[in-house]
Length: 186
Image 1 (cartoon, rainbow, N blue to C red):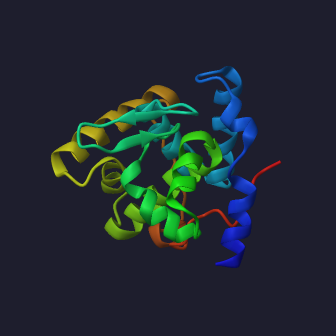
Image 2: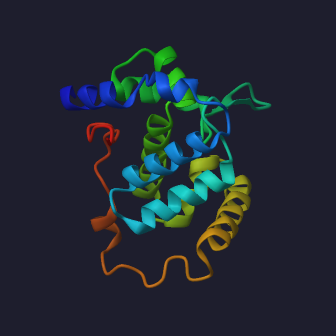
């Protein structure tokens, strides 16, 4: 866990991220940089994160209330129900983790990546993992998967994942730890 905490210190609490105007061009460039960094050169993962981003349509500073009392936080609208789990994974106060999800785009993108990849590991299905990112409810998952698929085609074209890389699913998956140990890009 020490390397995870060291990476967290680099990725979180950025005053520059917190001070950016909502929806600004600078904020959008920062979100794009965070998505590129989080995908670590894996085109399929970068496209996935863009699909989630386009569907969620959040922004730096977003804190959108839901009817069930939770909030969707930051650019990829990570649900506040995950704050407790994420705070345990990074060994930080839940209030601080919530603030980072709202204001630090790279922390938010890394959390979204972790949520998606956790769903992928659990289900073994790309599209099921996309649905689980949004909701535990099957009918909501199905609707969400279709919306993300439309967003992916809109952004990347009809052959968004073609040709498929020759790796197997197990080769594409990562460890189950929260991916903050990599440090923040320059």
